[in-house]
Image (cartoon, rainbow over all chains, first blue to last red; front, side, top):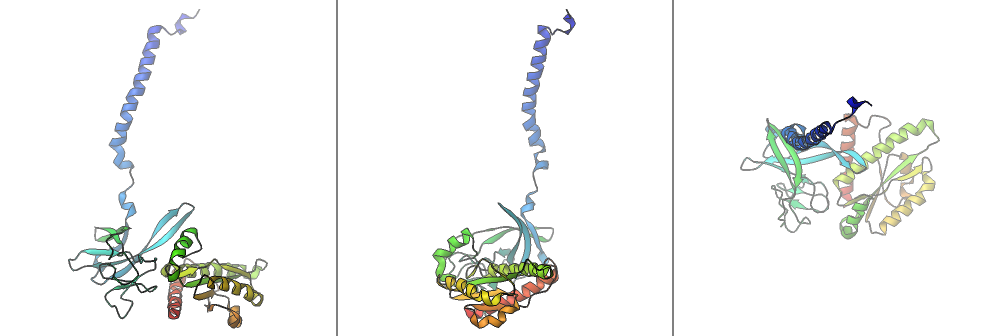
Length: 169
Length: 151
């Protein structure tokens, strides 16, 4: 009846091959394109680092710096205040220590006890740490204070995660 | 330490180190339009305070669940507060502090089995403002020193 509307065998095969070929080509190209533009899609890694202080502020004496991060714990999203003790050591390297006592999690203070003017002191159970964060044997803590990962960019100090250095005394 | 699964699990084996408990006493009266805002604000303030103190002394202070009561019923509540205190002392917690902004407790201080920490709070204000924050920090610092004096 209407032969014009009928699809011939040749046409049918052509359509099918183009279709399948197109899918295959797309399947091969998509990952390549994805790789090519990948750097644009990834979040900046510095998102994990927070600018805390200007490098000029850091002295040889440990100073307390505070900043806040958004923390998501399963149910709650909350702003958490973080603190670090930051100073330059004898080799002019920056040291950023976590103030959380490795014993039971109190907050340690620098030189808060008159008897130990050059140590970190934990008010809860008298835990003590040397200036480099190493715990002093004979006091309750069994591990040194964790060090913050840090980087310096354009004169600002950025702090990341606190990492256990291990090797307690 | 707090009344949470994680903290209580940590508390049990380390009992001998955690000898202080802080119970927030928070009054409220849901029938009173006049006091509602103020009481809600003081509850928030109380939580900020106790959280701050707990955070600093996590390893020695246990923050109890908040003790709520209908305001102006302090005399009748004394017995119930004391039950809480006794129960905590059985743990054994050596020092029990009752933290409140409700000045009515001052009158019944001698009947309370724990140390009353009454702090004149703020009637109103903005919990987020820097003014409130510095007030809270300063006060919390002094309260910590007071608690330390008992250790």
